[in-house]
Length: 415
Image (cartoon, rainbow, N blue to C red; front, side, top):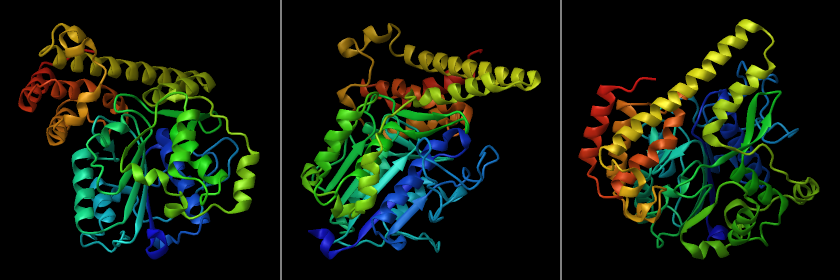
């Protein structure tokens, strides 16, 4: 197999920051511990994470990050390859294809016999995956992968993506470039957080991520294939629906081709712990739940009232976003869902034919004109981007949508 001849590269990316998104960096830190314990050397692992969780003022145990209830600290030893403002889609794509961009930072210097495994966790929307201050779009991700394939940068690649609407990132992924991708959710649905920790006031993990990592640690990866793992994930997921894309021949490969093998002692220990995903919640409801938890525990009435005001303001922001998006949509389909072919405004199969560059252009216009979803209070705007994407799916020109966005924004929608 290719892995016997070449190197096994791993890239781990947490695209978020702030304490409210604790789970994404916890997921990535745990993923690092898995590949590290499996024997993949650090010089073949690239980690991108903001690194503002372990020593955050909200952390009751400084220097500690856990990824499941009463779990081990997964923070020690995690490489600081890209942190803070270096966590960008531009640096991600450059590191992936081995371009240092005049920076002396770690990149993947892979060749034609090498494998690459990528795991990413953050918020998302149709055709995009978030980073702290900018977004990675499906158009650019797929273009980079095609470029890498032309340049013989890998023998096979696997991407696991944890985000809402993550299936939309791979709808136009070719099936002939030796890349296999697995998403946490369909192209038209949210992913889900899990494990609410009242002590830390944070969700510790995500549903899809907890499952793939548990399976990886509990099994002999020389005997288990990606098909086996995907079947397990599909069986165990209760909220969103994991999907796979691309080169389906890879599903027959042992997972060890990419991630080596989990030590026997770890397999035994993991199997002995019964996996039970608790507190499953729609990713865009996490902000509300965390605030509600803080309100319920606060005894100082002044602080409590301040939290209540923040909670109310968040609901008002959500309502304003919904009204503005509806106003844009109604300019083209005033009858609502009945005006759309098939009668369902749910994000169906036509997304695979969408112009991804047009989607990027429209999404960036919406972000910069209306609600910048990179600001924590506006994360909820991502959950309404599917309405904008549907307009493109149903034949509305990008220029027309952007004009409507500009007009709606200038008119304003009172809270």
